[in-house]
Image 1: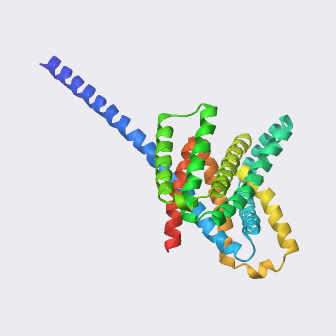
Image 2: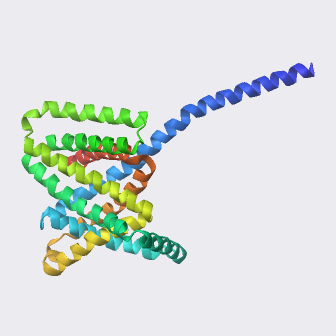
Length: 294
């Protein structure tokens, strides 16, 4: 009798473990999807709101100058964060960066300058696109080219997965559906400008991810903000009247932009270019519409 009881308990225990494994095999992927959505949604939220504040900032000067000023504000914010960090982590990071810099100084310099130059190119081409094509058509155009270029990069690097290809296919279908409705608004020049803006964005983010892998996520953001922020301070040196024209609340965009770049680097390193760029761009469009509505 006791033998049968032990056998029964063992079978029940085995069955419970099997059910638990099946449940975990379902829950773990769902948890992973939620983590990706939460992280990319946070990036999209910060990006959409930083652009909203930067648009207010650009009304006092120009979009290009507003970009430099926003990075100058972000640089002050990042330096403040760096000053609050522990001395031990500072020394550890500095030693690691110095050793990598000695190994390949040219590559390190290129990785710092490339995201900065491409960030300026994104602003220029994006503004030129919205002049040539209406915003309602420019947004799906950006999404289309961002997905295509990210797909090409990951195909070259051989890191494509079924999940990423499926997401890319859905995004391409949605963007093409929007463009089919508004095809009369498109011009060949506008399409070329949108492609240039998307390519600049992808190169900028890929270089930023590579820089973060050579240093740390925080250091990479600090270096890129250092390049563009320095130009922002030079602009203020030549145009001190801007200080009186800029509303104080519009400076929030620089802080949000710095926070976005920090989260972006983490997202790119965790999930790769295709998944991160596609989700962030799609969610940013949604947050942009909500922000504009309110």
